Length: 407
Ligand code: ADP
Ligand code: ASP
Ligand code: MG
Image 1: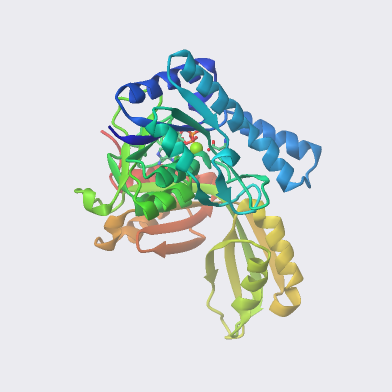
Image 2: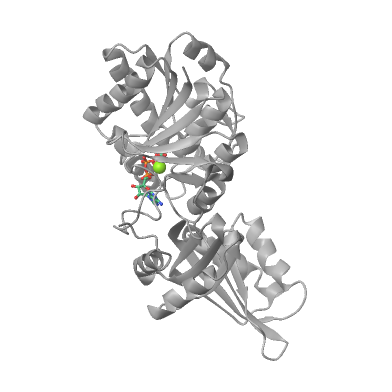
């Protein structure tokens, strides 16, 4: 007998037939003698609808009320799944985030889970009750409802699994595992049998939406074994996210991720002197803007240079404003921006021991005539910023170049 957490994403609970199907998958685990806590996302499309309604009423909406509205999608699916389970004889009840409670920070719409009190849940699981926990939601220190960022259902599931010290956390979704790249854009992508926490963390944070980044962080920290499985084909192999020691075959590149959520800002002719980076990035940090890639050109005369950096596309306007306000302290001549850029990254722990990975990337992109605007690297990834129109071409070409194509 094991204690397991099963998470079902939006497409898995998109209508009543699918909710009935999910109930049969849960019942199977319960009948096998396992203690089961299920976490659910809102029915597909619901969260988008709720976000749009809130924005339509007021572009400057109150973030606390936004959370009240968007968290409701999970309340519906959790209640419906509990009913569906009861109908087939499973002793189930729903739990909202505040009822456990799932305690989070007060940063509405992107709160961080700080702790989960799972004592009552644990007691009831031991008594044979099945829990259906609403994902994506929690409660702030002042008792107001919070949500934990888009795609946060994964994080709720892993956090519940960590709190319960569950034997595993199964993430059921619309693909049968983690692929070498997004199977929606590369038909030749293939499923990874296993992927390390570290690689998954990079893939997620570099754009692979199959798992929310924070969920992988929590899994890694608490050593929660995570499996990604298909709701519609649960017998297909799935992917295990695990420790490096558990992986035998290590290729140089494990996967390719991409993100269109990028924008580029260039400050032209800034003074080339100590303190200038602090004058630029200080105000951006103070405005809560995350800067990702940075490149500073060599100055021709030793006095003036250009500096380019990237921010999330949604933060472009705020970043430009922060730079303009700090303009006098920075002393740039001109500022330009481009929101039609995308980041493509190759990821693999094998990079630690294989050389020439970056070179293959640069050569492949150059053969396709794709210009690289910014480069950044870490121990297990190389990322490049390119024009958005070439994303799919770049991802496919790199997928072939690193011999990741299936068949
Ligand atoms: P859910 O609603 O179940 O949380 P998501 O839409 O959030 O599902 O995540 C699943 C999707 O992630 C897949 O349909 C796929 O298009 C996308 N995806 C992106 N990168 C990858 C990858 N490397 N492997 C698998 N799926 C990926
Ligand atoms: N329903 C939320 C969203 O659409 C959370 C999730 O699906 O993971 O972002
Ligand atoms: Mg998701």
